[in-house]
Amino acid sequence: MREATAIAHPNIALVKYWGKRDLRLNLPAVPSLSLTLGGYRTRTTVTWGTSRDEIVLNGLMGDDPKVRRVLDLVAPGRPGVRVESDNDFPTGAGLASSASGFAALVVAAAAAAGRALSVDALSALARRGSGSACRSLFGGFVQWPLGTEPDGSDSVGVPIAPADHWDVRLLVAVVSEARKDVGSTEGMTRSQETSPYWPTWVAMGPGLVDRAREAVLARDLAALGEAMETSTFAMHATMHTAVPPLLYWQPATVAALHAVFALRRDGVAAYATMDAGPQVKVLCAAADAERVRAALVPHVLRVDVHAPGGPARLVP
Ligand code: DP6
Image (cartoon, rainbow, N blue to C red; front, top):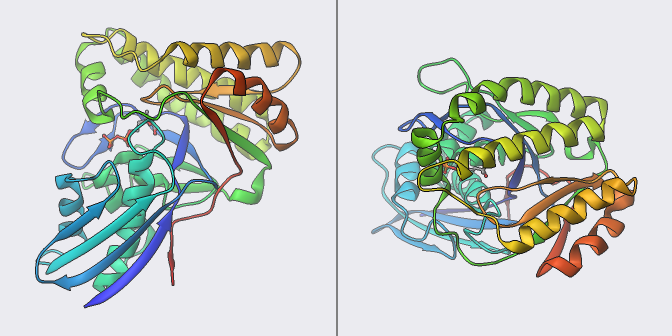
């Protein structure tokens, strides 16, 4: 039996992944761009060669067949495997737990299996578990391109700037820690199949990622913030116009958004994004983080402040 432990951080998409062009390979309908968070983490230990599979997760992946499928892909014909994983943040509430979960899983599983896989191969494996996980293999700012290879091997995370490139903060305003009713995969399918805005959303993706990448490289917060908010609200428009509608927002979500817009009117460069959940995430310069936090606190359960985080990695 061999054992390996890895940690990985969640990432928050600044330009969103929402929709799939290939369900089996989990290839995206749009390219995306993310920031890996320094604060939260998933820690996963994999023991390779047990008599049967034993999966102990505090998370979203509970009895998720995707965990077994990803393990099968790491080493076809594998033996029994024990997986033990924990998150230090709420699971399944729109805080990207599946991203750090599958990133940590593939890094630990490949090491425990004695397979020396490239980071691109690990990113592609993580993608098969959850699309956004392919970005959590890397730290800092990460792009996930559409790719052109039929097997999806080039639709993997691509680091565009490391964590220390830019001293920004991403604040997570936690509105609710409850699990969401409709998961990302189901939500995407519903948007894709029923929203009249779907074709517009897909057409916008490449331009938004280009704008965001340029802005990251130029450290232009206003340009990045604008692309990020455009992506967020366009994605939520496909959710709101799905049949039946998908409304992940709570009243406190809207209150937090107005607080961000009020900060901007007062001259603070703060920009908002939301995922498939009620939390509001706010991007700003490190020097403004305290002021932004104070503006959000009255509206939400708690505010976590994150510096950019590093890549998924093995730990002793
Ligand atoms: C709104 O990666 O959780 O957070 O590939 O179906 O597992 P699956 O979806 P997932 O979706 C994330 C969607 C998002 C935007 C993003 O992270 O880019």
